[in-house]
Every structure is written in C-alpha cells, then in structure tokens.
Image (tube, rainbow, N blue to C red; front, side, top):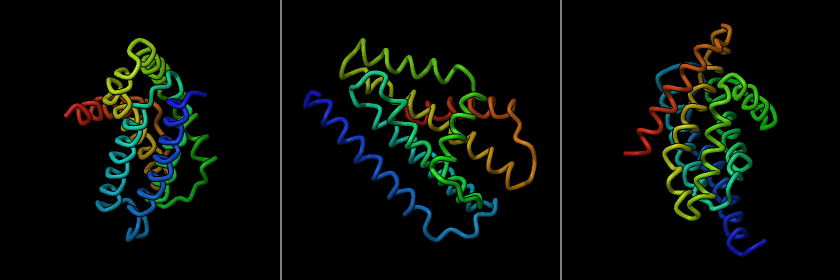
Length: 181
C-alpha cells in the first residue's frame, strides 16, 4: 500500500469517528423523538452534516472505494434518524435498511457510484473534488428516504416505494444544488 493510500485511509477513518461524535453531540437535548418541528429540524441538520462529511470523504483518491467508505457513514446517519424518530436500531440493522432502500431507489445509485469511480480514474486528484456535489446529493437523497421510512413507521403506515423513489430523486437534486452553492 502506498503512503498516499495509507494517508487517505487514515483520513477516512478519522472522518468516520468525527461523524459519529458530531451526530451524537448533535442529538443531545432532543425530546422524545416524536415527529415534530424540532425532530424535523434535527433530521435535516443530520442529513446535511452527513452529506457534507461524505462529500469531503469522497475526495479521497481511491477509485471505486467510495461505496465501502460511505456506506458505514450513511448507516450511522440511518441510526441517528431512527433515534430522532423514536426507534433504536443497530448499525447492522441500519446497513440492512440501506441495502433494502438501495433496491427501492434502483440502479441509478449503482450507476452514480460507477460515475464517481470513473471520475477518479480519469482525473486522479481532481476527480474526487468534482464528485462533491454528486456525493452530497446522493447522501442527501438517501437521508430523505431513510427519514420517510422512519416517519411512516412512527405513524404506523406502509412505506410507499414509489414515493421513496420520488423523494430520492428530488432530495438528490436538492442536495446537489446545496453542494454547488
């Protein structure tokens, strides 16, 4: 392993630890997690924070490593949203939920992960920075779908897969626009 890849790996691990700390600290002082304006605001802050961290981590130069690096960060987000919405889930349960939701969202997510890897292959160094809006948007869209899932669960209603696809697409677009600003 080269020094550059060791440095990138250490930076990613440090970012994951920082994310967990920030999300836990961000949750302090929350009420009982019932759907409310405060919980909505908390979820939105957590999604933006995680999307920003994922975008920063995605600047690492290793092509096609993003899915293995970003998924644990996004699983931490899923745990945070679940807790905010009144459910306790383990990282394993959150990872399973992400895989299930990836199936709901469709092949677009896999295609975007491929595009991220190709950017990094074609433009080493610069490619990672060019993917910032894409990664921010993907993570933001995933966060919105995870929130939709736990809000439906809290209300005791069925999770609507068609609505999840719409939420992901609009969330991805909203996240890309936020990252571009």
